[in-house]
Amino acid sequence: MPTIARLPDLLISQIAAGEVVERPASVLKELLENSLDAGSKAIQVHLEEGGVKLIRITDDGCGIAKDQLALALTRHATSKIVSLDDLERVSSLGFRGEALASVASVARLSISSRERGASHAWKLKAETGAEPEPAALMAGTIVEMRDLYYNTPARRKFLKAEGTEFAHCADAVKRLALTRPDVAFSLTHNGRNLFQLAPADSPRRIADILGDDFLGAARRLEAAAGPLAIAGFAIDPTRATDAKDGQYVFVNGRFVRDKVIAHALREAYRDVLHGSRQPAVCLFINIDPALVDVNVHPAKTEVRFRDSRAMHQFVFHAIQRTLAAPVQAESAPSLV
Ligand code: ADP
Ligand code: MG
Image (cartoon, rainbow, N blue to C red; front, side, top):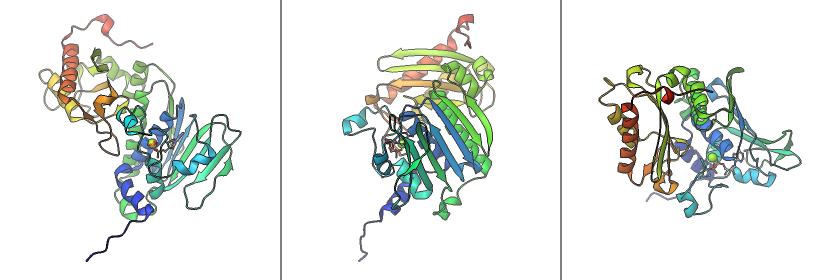
């Protein structure tokens, strides 16, 4: 008879990390979400070697109290929900309380933080037995991850070339920057500054990230019905190009890949866009949080709608109406 034994905590975290920490970009996404959930208004990202060697996020959010630092690194510890009720209407980007613990199990992690109003900052390394040490920090939090997969060589083999991993990291920053134009973001890779985004309105931020060309060739849309609302830009079919990386769909501020929405988009463009072209769009969809389940997968890029037919029809009609409307001078997106 095989014997059943409980797995050690570290191994439990390493197994769970397989779902959350797919590559450097997934670590970066989790850390950025934490900074946004902490109310940050300016976030700096420093990467080395595609994020494998170093990911350092500096934010100006609410910070973490000294006596909570160790807890933040523990599995299933979160400040964002306390009950099933909260989970059902969650509005923060995180809520599972496992990102930091997962990252800590497959990389070297440290957090330095100064809670708002505290007299100084503290730093905690995620190592067994480590104690918080005084740190120099004016406000906010610095999370530093080094040497991803240093202790799990099998996983390291799945990493792609530095350039590829970096491109995924840059995408992760861009996606969150699109949803939060009010927040400043900067990105540095191997000491080179790649972008610096000042707080802006949404069209300006979209132009900063997706380019003036996209904005100039897109139609603006805005619609609402019951618990659903949509706003954003959809490419004018006559001006679509072959660029295939142009689909940005956000649900309640979260970048998602959703079959229902993707299908609605294809249908709405079907008669006006040729061949296998993917319509370039940047769409922000809002729905009553009680009508969407974001707790489908640990990476949280999948969602499930309670009424997916209603979502499909809503998106389909909103796009179709926008594409059918005559182009008016005033409906052309304007940049301030
Ligand atoms: P979750 O985000 O799901 O709560 P995490 O493991 O990502 O789980 O983070 C655990 C907790 O640590 C968070 O709930 C939050 O209280 C705290 N935390 C993490 N990052 C930051 C940050 N940058 N600023 C303030 N608090 C943070
Ligand atoms: Mg989190």
